Image (tube, rainbow, N blue to C red; front, top):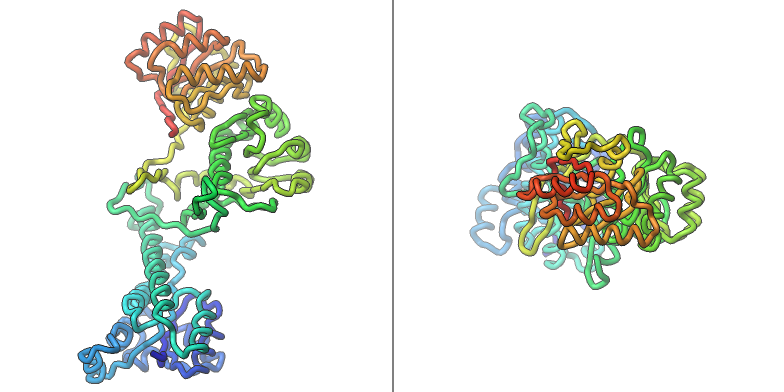
Length: 532
């Protein structure tokens, strides 16, 4: 059916003037509202104001203008239903064949820090109502919500004189996706504030039902494996320094699914350390686990220490820093093959050096200015399972030294305390079961993803010895309690002098006794960091 009437009411006016002009040339009568009508008239496009159709003025500061039977009757009527046609004739309702609507910029209003009142005013009511009505009636009506579809509509009308059912159905799906997303964004925001628009100080609700909305950043070449499709999405209001908000400033290849996952782990690990208080941190990640981690006074010192932990596994890995990458460390990095590097900033010379590696993807978070936002607008960790999803708080807790409990006869030395705190931050980001041996701010042995804790301890020690690292008087961190004393006995064999672990096992006394027998210090954190 050839369209004879369109209603156009858009907040995003991109491309609307040439689109409306083409519709007018094809004989489509245009109805419009407010600012859209004004713009079209200024461009000499004939327009009927919405009040001419409804016989009712726009009222309440424009809050009520399209919510009228002559609008929704024109959209929702079935063109081949005699009763509908009769009703339209009796009430003077004329059909509307094309609805061109995009919605008030709610998300953008929130992001620019507007007042609570202005944010609430940018909750669109009439727009979503028209969009849903037109999408429901796609058999007869074309709903256009995306300026990217304007050309497609014009081309189809010019070639056939009408818009195909296939196209109308495609546009209807896009429309319902838009309104679902729009409502979910509003929900996300409202649950983050109180009734006065102030930030909610209470923990976020595990609401029922749970709506989570994301916007697509890009399609990916493939997923974990080449036979899997993949895309990368962003949480709507998250602004913290992270891989999702990072900018790629160099690299010929696009980031892969695995790259992004590994960068996330690497950057989260280095963010455990304050560059001013703790030192500059460098993490090298391979298959979602650190194969090198160290802190130093300079980026190059941290990198060289981290690389010595396992230079073999570092090949093709991901590097992360918690501070500006300088020229000196850039010269070292380009001597080896890495997939990606992420850091808050890069010196001008460092960036030029890194750019000599064509396929090295270089990402920047443009500083750490929003580090205090960690968890504020992205409070949940979601894990997909077949047919469902697990949702939990993000593990953002950090141990407070004053709350740690020494449970052995021997207390840690000052140097051991530093290494214990360092190691416990590192083990948090290692897949369970895991342990980390550390000495002088270097994770000299990393035991990853073992099904028993004693095997994790053995594997980490074996790797450290293989790399020729000195383990004498090192410390050991475990992300969960020791179920038996066997891990402590293994640690003693390689020279461990202090252990940090959550505690809480029914055999804690046995484990503490083993530490005392070996002359070790042992600290309980009361915090577990399982990571699956």
